[in-house]
Length: 191
Image (cartoon, rainbow, N blue to C red; front, top):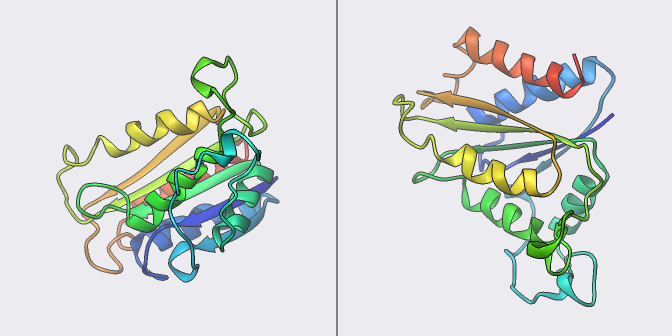
């Protein structure tokens, strides 16, 4: 099993990174091959709305560091996408990545029974970490993006949501979050 981790946090060692690491480590312990991309370390653009991926190409034609990430998602069995919540949404880095996944949709995707270029049956874990402890705030993020990834053919989209993790090691201090992350790692491995 191949797992692609896309970390949308600008911090390499924050709460989002910790939860992602626990999930990835759990999957590795069960035999997964894990490839991790730190979006903040890459040089890339957002979607250019050129529509080339709906005409002359079956892939995004923008050539930058995100090309390797999109190729890895195409080839993986499971995607681990992680982002802290910034101003009520995923980070700018994560949003740019998500926008570029538009290239996974076939031409006239709205009219197609199978709108996706991705092989069916992939799994996904979506990690969201927010400093705000009120769980009712920003609860709309996961379902909004889940709809797009289900459109791509992801059969299981597992949320890992951490609320009230403001300081760097808050997630580590909450055993229930570590357990939630471990469970997500096991689920993508079919356990």
